[in-house]
Amino acid sequence: MPEGPWSCSDCRAGKKPHYKQIVWVKLGNYRWWPAEICNPRLVPSNIQSLRHDIGDFPVFFFGSHDYYWINQGRVFPYVENDKNFVTGQININKTFKKALEEAARRFQELKAQRESREALEQERNSRKPPPYKFIKSNKPVGKVQMHVADLSEIPRCNCRPTDEHPCSLDSQCLNRMLQYECHPQVCPAGDNCENQCFSKRLYAETEVIKTDGRGWGLRTNQALRKGDFVTEYVGEVIDSEECQQRIKRAHENHSRVFSDRYVRIGLFTLCDIESGTELTFNYNLHCVGNRRSSCHCGADNCSGFLGVQPTSAVVMEKEEKARNAKLKPKKRKLRPEGKHTHEYFCFRCGEGGELVMCDRKDCPKAYHLLCLNLTKPPYGRWECPWHDCSVCGSPASSLCDFCPRSFCQDHEAGALTASSLEDRPCCSSHNPLNPLGSNPSSTQQRRGEEV
Image 1 (cartoon, rainbow, N blue to C red):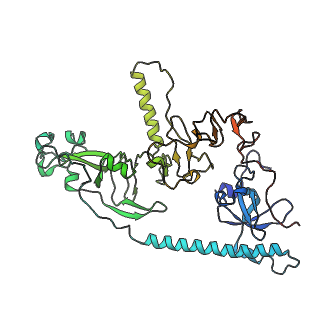
Image 2: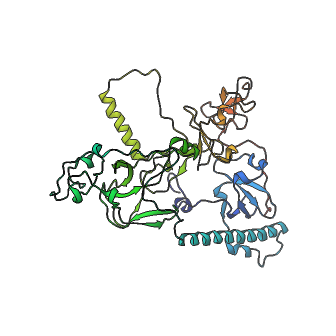
Image 3: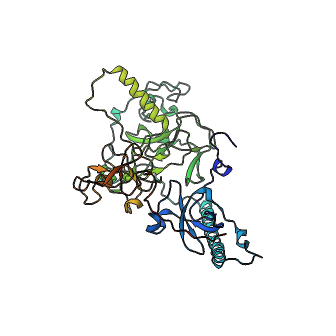
């Protein structure tokens, strides 16, 4: 026997059952039976309420059309040749034979759907990127005004036209240090100035590529040094009113350069990049509409979501705060202050994905839109249902630690009990001895043929 924890080869390889997969299921003394793994949210409500453990999933038995909650250790995949399992056998139960026929048909149906999706994806990958209108300068929208500075206000550097590389990245150009681009009519280096990438549109050699699972991307066809200019970020310039109407709050972290007497935004490299490398950048967005989107950039320090700081940024922020704390006199705080962080799993179903965040101070809870019966993210400030009484909707004073159920002062009497987990409050929807399981039930629906 192996010593310590042990995992099978499938688990070590990361293989997991998935929804709409045909499998063989083994229950007690019943024979192996063909079934389909179901999404827990799509099974009948009485099946959802049956008691089960964390990691269990419902299966639909062919032939009998019953459901049962099962774990990964009691299933193995159904393959196409399994439809011939009863060939040559006699005295086969009619229900079991019917189950094999239904499983074979369903297997072929799912196979056809999968092949159709793969063909569609292959066709989509062979196409060109969606059409777009190429523009060379920013376009103001609505009431936005582009402020243009006077030539006399534009700073003048001390570079000379006789320098080997005037105003270059390795020079002591004052404008470059201040993130200003030299103006052709002001820079003393004249045509030899190497700090006019925006006005001359000296973009890096790149090409649009189709990535694996991330849509369309951009790849550099030349080696780039740290600090090199890649391209200008050009588009519509909108004000806060227009931003709210579009339900977007975008805070770009790109380098800004003052050029041609107004602000322009460009993308610059943060490190040396080899030719043929896909280019990525951190959007540094707050969660749009309180919703967190998964990120697939593949960076080692990626937080995993758009709208969440990467690991290196968090570490740098902590180090910066620590340095500042040493320079400033310590002040006594009236009460501790902490960063408002949210959980990565839905408080109602326990799954991950795109989540809606509660805006209430110090509330870490998050939910799927589907679990909130919403079709789109809520607009503006939003507080989750955990803070409202589940009976009357009044402000809650007692809350369950294991689900969004809560109660006001008028309805809290006897609504919560202390659980076995650190005496945490637990509502009647959970078993106090095992509150992490689902709603208790004395029976489970199952079907099989006894050996």
